[in-house]
Image (cartoon, rainbow, N blue to C red; front, top):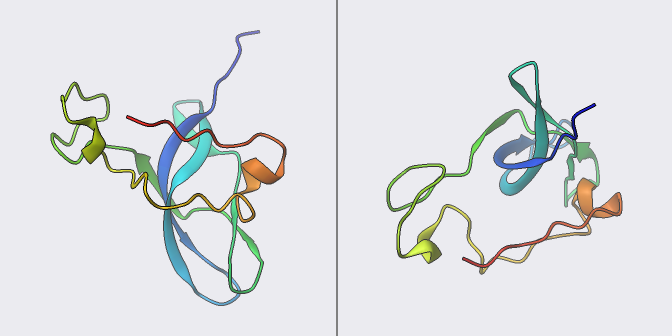
Length: 104
């Protein structure tokens, strides 16, 4: 049986309890039958309800708009590396599979 790896995507969330909305570049899932299936949700920081994204998309480079870019200045990617990752709200981190933030 082939090993399936989680792929990081960008996700849009809306809490079903309080209607708070947020976005995250820490959405992990895998492709099943050519469709991206999210494996881990995120907890709403206001009401503590676990939420799944209502929409996901591949992370893209801000410079060229490509998923797998070859830009020299990789610090300008879609992901804001200066923003802290809230591992206390992250379903993947809480499941014992910490998100590893790569530095470009």
